[in-house]
Image (cartoon, helix red, strand yellow):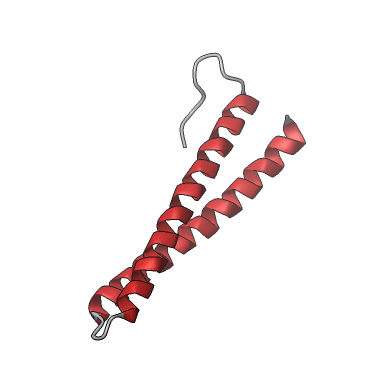
Length: 85
């Protein structure tokens, strides 16, 4: 997270951070969908590469955890904004 920009109020900064977090969640969700599709592609092959599938599944797990954490942070931030701005 970054600090306030010149002339930015604390409420404006929190709104900007919330927008950045929403964008990050959207991009991470799109990436997760692509990874899920790639895993499904690999599993559909006659002799799927289990090591590649495993690596992608681990990447997906980490990404989904990040999305979950970001959503929690966003909910907390939105709560602070609604209470204080």
